Length: 128
Image (cartoon, rainbow, N blue to C red; front, side, top):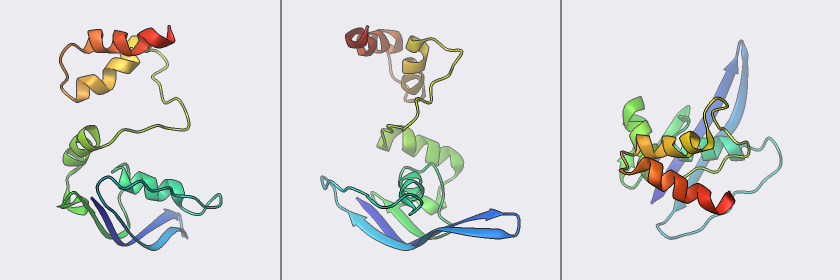
């Protein structure tokens, strides 16, 4: 379950403050599907980055499956990302100097998966 209470995000650029989120509250229950839509610049990506533990809110509370995400260390956040989320980015986000197999293997390495090469090859087989 995702519980977001009065979450704000402010980006500071020198003396300028950009308010990306202004007090968002949201609950997403297990099994529920949610779509986040809005105009360009309305904070959709910022909210998704916070939900996915890629960024931290400036204020407010984010509870993920009973865990207060705001209290987690960077290492615990990385562990949570690797076990709780799957990301599909707009850009490829591939390592340019790595092979396709190595790029597919990378998240398997972080997750502690066995048979990384075999699983990566199986995933790539349908796309040639």
